[in-house]
Image 1 (cartoon, rainbow, N blue to C red):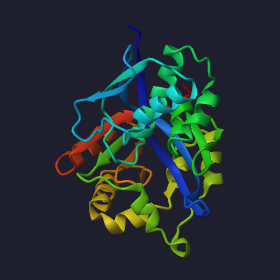
Image 2 (image 1 turned 90 degrees about the vertical axis):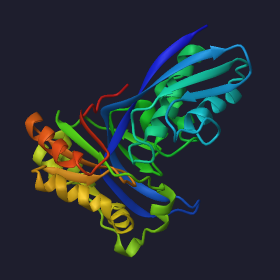
Image 3 (image 1 turned 180 degrees about the horizontal axis):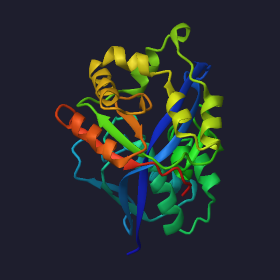
Image 4 (image 1 turned 135 degrees about the vertical axis):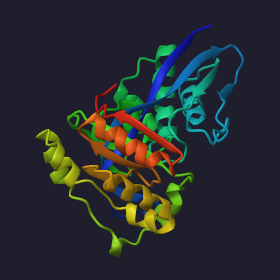
Length: 287
């Protein structure tokens, strides 16, 4: 039996700008995403039986078509007429419904893993195109690294990694529906981050410039719906975090910190009331 192990890293949004509603019902976005070293691990095994099996000990991970990794496996099997089945054992470390693209990254890892297992010889760019059919963040997660994502998130422009730093992630005990948050967006009230200034700061490896230009058009919407998110932001700032922002549609908030000691201080400050807290590093490099 052929088996392969693949890592699926989480992402954070350094910026997320909502530009308007599209005719297909999605929103036009422009955002800068980068990977961090919090990751799920997937073990993919080829089955002789004609089925897709998802195994996970995590209570909130579906094992059917609702799971993006399942959809990724289904897409490749149909598109390339793969007769054998696949079992995906999912070791879930990224919180679910958290704004960290955990499900999208699992789908991306499934595409990369099956590409190798079945010798499909697809480039990362070709896999990213397939990923766009599964979900908006899947294309980015296929390639990883740091990128400006446009359209509904599938059009990527790769940029250099931000300077190395620590990232503290805090997720309250709630999940957030991305669709609900986008539905609540009022375009006349949207705060637009300065994407150009962020790109410049990243190119210059200017940590303080990156912290100053963090921005997320969805943050005010989620903060209204979920006051717990605001509490995490305020605690991080109070503990001395240089840059604090909600990732994606939330509810996870991240803090960027240069020094490990301060990162652990913020971690300890959150641990009392925030159930899921992580200290990780920026990865920012392509797969």
